[in-house]
Structure formats: C-alpha cells, structure tokens
Length: 390
Ligand SMILES: *Cc1c(COP(=O)(O)O)cnc(C)c1O
Ligand code: SF4
Image (tube, rainbow, N blue to C red; front, side, top):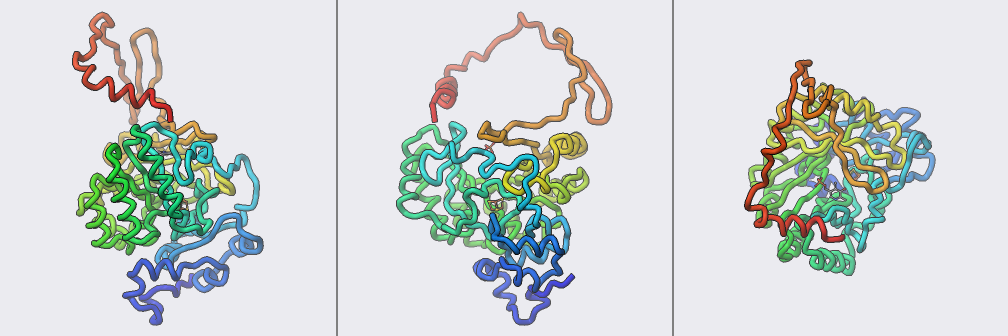
C-alpha cells in the first residue's frame, strides 16, 4: 500500500501545515486522481467514479492515512455498491424533512431541537443518514435562515436543548461557531447546548486550546463525537479529546454498527474501553439507518442485538453504549435491548443474566403502593413538556 500524503513521508508537506486544520480541509481529497496518489484502488472503488456520484466524496489527508486499516477504508472510500438498490433505501430515513418547521431546524422531540448550521463535512461517511442535506456545499447558513432558526428556538420555550449539527459544525470558523453559541446562550430557556462533530475522528487538529477555551465560556456545552473503530483513536485524536475534557466539556460518543467495519463484540469492546479510558462516555451504538446506498454497510437487527448481548455484563456500565434504532419515517429512537426475561407469571418474573445464572423477581404487594408527597413541586414542568405540541 502506498501512502505518500503525510508530512513524515513527503518532504513537500510542512509539519506546521499538517497540524493546521484549515490546511487539512483545503487539501482534502475528493477525486479519483487524489485517491490514486495515495492508494491502489480496487476495480470496484475505481468504478464508483465513472458515474456522477449521488453523494459527495471527501477525505482529509489525516484521515486518509488511516485507510491502511481496511475497516476504515470502507467508511471513507466509496464503492460501486452505492449505486445498487438493495432491500431498503430512503433519501431521508428519519423523515427529518417532515419535522422541519423552518429551514435548518429539525424538531422531533418536545424539549430538544437540531440546528443544522452547515451542510459541509471534512469527510463524507459513506453511510451518512442525512444524504438529502449533507454535502451540497452551501456551507454556513445564510443570515436570513440563521435569524429565522434563532427566532424559532426563541418562540418555543419547551426547547431546553439545542443540538448543533450539520454537516459538521466544526467545519466553520471559531468566530462563527462561538457567535452561534453566544446567540443561543442569550435565549433564556436554552439550558443545554450539544455540538455533534466528527472532527476529533477525521481532523483532530481542529480541536485547539483556543477552541476549547471558547466552548468553556458557554457551558454547559456537551460534545458528541463519532468514533466507530479503535484504530480511529490515534495519539492525535486522544489529545483532541483530552483538550475538550480538560476544559470541562463532557464528551460522549455515538457509534454506528457497520458491516465489515465494527460488527463484532471484540471490536466494540475495544472501542468502548479505550474511549472510556480517554474519559469519553460511549452513549449510543446505532443501528445503521437505511439511507441511499447503505445496504452493504448495514448489519441485521439480530446481529446488532447479539453484539449488545455479548457486551452486556462483560463491559463496565460506564463503557456500555445503548443500542438504538431510529424508526424509519420519523418515529424517533427506540432502544434495542437483549431479552433477559425467561418467564412471567402473575407477579413473578424469571430472568437469566449475562453469564447464564437465573433468578426470580417478585413484585411487592400492590396494597403498599404509594406516591411521593412532593409531586406537585415537579408536576407542572413535567406536564408542560408532555403537553406542549411542537
Ligand atoms: C437523536 C435525535 C435527538 C437527540 O436524541 P437523544 O436521545 O436526546 O440523544 C434529537 N432530535 C432528533 C431529531 C434526533 O434524531
Ligand atoms: S460526519 Fe456525520 S453528517 Fe457528515 S457525512 Fe459523516 S455521518 Fe454524515
């Protein structure tokens, strides 16, 4: 395998360029010629470029280096299989365009909304669920759309949490990103801000001390990243995650189970343990959505559940991600949990645990049931979220 695109091996690349995130973005690879400079492509990979691609291709030089691991190569390099229709293919599997009250806002759950501030990513993952939007190179949101999105959030007091997403919100400058955080913080009912970004994986040099200091100003800011394979946890990625956590920004990881990439409990266990060691909480392990051209990258629900079952009890609860599926058509997320109950009769249930030991659980006597006396202190807030229509 040839890999010349690296400051260590190519004397034409200066190491100060290599560690500069804007250089990584400007020098990202997107054409057949770019890829052929770095790798020997298979016939299948090469033939993808014969037709007009339905979904952008782009990879940072940094992430391209990781393509020596075949699993990671499948995430970043397209294949002809993307043109083939298989069992289920939806341009917008989560029906986000149905829950899109104003441009750039996806509001599906009462108390939290997505704010898609850019459609750009520095790497286009072949399994992306938002192919209807991502990568149209509209870049940062236009100012009229930005104002309309902010007004929408302001007008909905039930929105407690805003999730900056895209595209990748960290492809925009610190200045624009921090201005967005400032504008969101000025809205009284916005309590939590989340940033969903794959930059720590594909361009860890994006996480600078200045950025971490900037994010800290707008706490509580939660950072959601997206590692799928232990080989993505390089020294550079570890340093980026460390910077965030050291600046008081909690980091969570959302992974996607992918066929031929990470669909084995040994891989998911290694990924989860290493993330936890780096103080990153594995949060979700998603069933891959049936986006266009994703059949060859998806696992079956049975396989995903079998992986979750293997991890159960053997992996620290802290390192355990929740297996979750987004119901196609916009039903929202549902947990996929292995079945541990082996029988249920009257008020008795039997469970068989992770390593085969069974036991019975008996409900308490129903006449003893009581509710806390201070419900009234909390009921109003609870009902408000339940009742408020979107
Ligand atoms: C996943 C998702 C969220 C966040 O859900 P959590 O379970 O809180 O992580 C919010 N809005 C939409 C539209 C989503 O798909
Ligand atoms: S980083 Fe996220 S939004 Fe961008 S291509 Fe990958 S999965 Fe899609």
